[in-house]
Amino acid sequence: MNLKFVVNDYVLIWNLLFQASISEKIHKLKQKLWINYKKEYNNTYRDKELMLKDPKNFIPNDDSIYNIVLETKEYEKIKKNTEKYRNQILKVWDNHKKETLKIIKSVTRMNIKPYQVLVVTDELDMIDTTTVKDAKVNTIVLGKKVTSDTSIKLIVELVFQIIKKELRSYKKEYKDIVEAVIELAILNEFPTRLTGRSHYLTGDPTLNYLKRQMYPYWLMYLGADKDDMLSFMMRDKIAFDVDKYPYEKELKKKNLLEFIDFCIRNQKYIVKINELEII
Image (cartoon, rainbow, N blue to C red; front, side):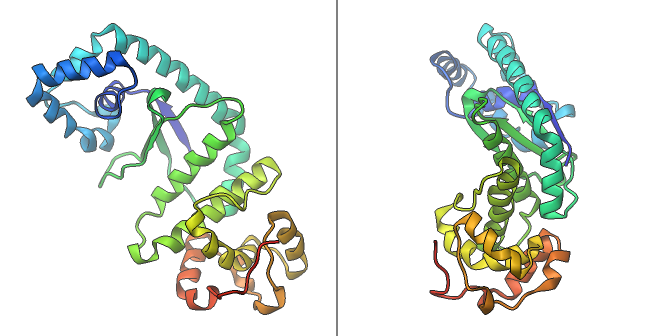
C-alpha cells in the first residue's frame, strides 16, 4: 500500500467551493461567485467525478470559476497553509510507514493498490472516499487536523477508509458483516499492534454485538491457538467459552477477503444469542 500525498489546485478549490465554508471571507467569495456566475458555478459542481478520475491531468471544460479563486489573496493563503499541512501529514506517514505497512500486510494478507491522497486544507475537516468508475488512479481526499496526540488516530482512519474502499464491491445485504470484519482488522487489531494496547472496544457501537460473535473466529484467523486465546480475551476485555467453538485451523491461512467469505457462509452458526459476555 503505497500512498502519495499531493496538493491539487482544482481539488482544493472545488472543495472550498462546495464543502462548508471555512471562513467568512470564503463564504463571501462563494456568495459573490454564485450571484455573478451562477451558470458557471453550477457547471463547476459537475467536475468532481472527472476531476477524481485523473487529478493530475484534469482540465475543466470551463475554468473561469477556478481562475477567479486562484487570483484571490485568500486562496493564496489557504494554498500555502495546505502545503504546510501536506508536509506535516507526510512526516507523520513517514514516521509510521514501515510499521504500518508491516502490520497491515500481516493482518489483511492482501496486496493493496497504490493510492493518491489529495490533500486539502485541514480546516475542511474531511475525508472523502468517493468511488469513481474506471478511474486511472485510486484517490482519497484528506483534510483532517492532526497533532502529535492524534497522529496515530489519523493514520488508522486513513487506512480504514482505504480498506473500506477496497472492499466496496460486496453486496449490500452483507454490509454489516463486511464492515464488522474491517473494523476488527483496522480499527481494532491494527492500532492494538501499533500502540501496544487494546483497541477492541472501539468502532461503530451498532457493530459491537456482531464483532463479539466473530471474535473467536477472528482470533483463529490471526493464528491464535486455543491455549493462547485466554491471553487475548484478557487483553481485549472480551470473553467466550473456548470449548464451545470448533477450532477452524484453515482460517490462519486465509486473507481478509476469504475470512469475510467464511463469515458470510457461516453467519447462522457464528451469531449465537446470549453466548458472549464482556469481562
